[in-house]
Length: 360
Ligand code: FAQ
Image (cartoon, rainbow, N blue to C red; front, top):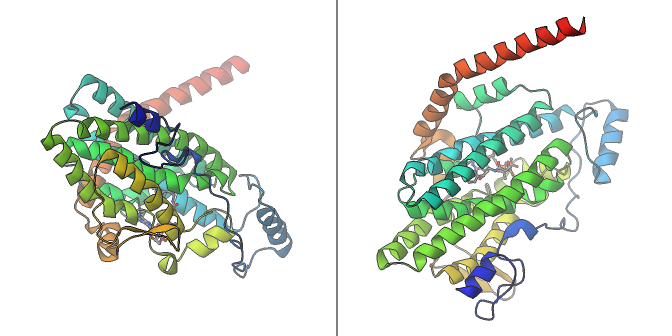
């Protein structure tokens, strides 16, 4: 148990598991850009050539773009798309785990879960704020979500059937989210990059709490162990799909990487996630449900089996098991909160009028 605790704290590797230092938790996964990662030619631009050249120079020098800076329309649109989808994922992502707050097995677990779900709401707020700096309003973004036009992460359209699902979401879903988001801390758009620093710190804690909850269950009864294994079986492939389609089928990747918005490709992040998770599963004592999963000495990576991309696209396009329920819950929450928003606005208007009167 002492060794497990040490691993959990991310401090040491054990002889038994050969976990390299810091491999357990992914706060440290700041991946250098692949050499040649910027070889994609610039898309032909219809923008002002002088402004465009200054923008390109800044991007090539790995500089940051800030809200007041000139930027091509396509760059702005890509950021609004990605950041708003990311924000939607955070607030829809509150729902599967929120479902277990009233049924958490102890006061301690309930308090942790409430804090985690609240953190996810906070991440949504930082991200909506970052997207607003690009000139889009929160109402516009929420309208996109509520009408089904905007996407959010596929992973949140699956049900949380048992308490073990909550632990597995922390371990694997937050784990995959961190793997994807650490490189976003170096995104070329300043407000997004800065929001991600705090988000990643919190997500790392989320992952640890999920893993710790699973470790406790895996030292329990046979039923508890079976419950964890069942949850891992149901979530594993969905987590691999979270990273998005294979690079060859990813229409946005090349340009996103050229602009320094994405830093690491969908497939490379997925591979990193698999490589990091295999030793964690071993420590936990669960089997990852993939008969093709094995270490490839030549590639120095794990090989893994085929992801069901048909299922992924069905889910992304609104036909997953919980899509309708998730969207209906968000729409209802928005409607139910209308009087709070109205009251807050009325209060702000009154305060502003009072301040103006005092200043006059
Ligand atoms: N689900 O060309 P690409 C979290 C769409 S936060 C649904 O590769 P891109 C925290 C994609 O939007 C999880 N749709 O696109 C948490 C595009 O459609 P579009 C969310 C997906 O943008 C934990 C189309 O497929 N994280 O978990 C998915 O270059 C626990 C083609 O794809 C982020 O949003 C998917 N999985 O790369 C909360 C991170 N994958 O827009 C609660 C930021 C792809 O053209 C509990 N986002 N699509 O109509 C990103 O890094 C990128 O946007 C990717 C997609 C990697 C998600």
